[in-house]
Length: 333
Image: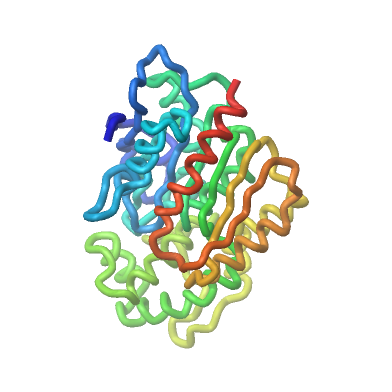
């Protein structure tokens, strides 16, 4: 690798505001391309990890697998991609993720990404001035965080990429409620299941699937309950039957619902990349298709379908990162 990776810590007041009382001290990794100095102003892209993944996995290689940042470094070193900074930050919670939204239970992760993180990056690195110099990208839950950021906080990030983002909850998330009910029934109660996952991690596939549901419920619930884990499940533990009113409240967080409320318009974004595998195990290819069709295309949008499923989506970053880099250079002041 010819560039360098710096690690720092940021203290976030926003993250600490949830009922979970999470640590405000968060590590971030920043990639500096070959030859970077503080005298060089560059665009910067922020990478969001998927559920159950750490921010460092986007920067450091796994056996036989170069990381997205290592692939980007090779492209920059070869002159195929213009240089840029890249960042990923710790957004971990005991349930496995944050969904990158503001939550009275988990904390205000969207505010962290919209305000505190950009300010910190501009203080410690020489980033080109203006909102046009910042990009945001993620896969799966990270892609969901990208779409919600564009919809809820327009103007912060000028370019974005969302790989198989969570959405169309009735199609993609609702079928998993049954698995969460089964895991809760086996554990004896919601509290026992949530505490075990939070302290030990999921012990099998059933609990992993339940952890995804519990994270989503914790992130999307806007009326927290008093008892830990401060949210209720939208189904009956005895019958598995869904409470339609409670489920409807969870669905208010769906990016498709948010987009419809804004008449299909995403403001102040210059470039958006969307993709999904045609065999996505969670049906997120249908969710991504629906989001693309519902958009009013006032900006440059690239939408691609690829042969494959939901696993290993971070490998797609190597495809979208060059487009992101060029879009950020084009839109930066």
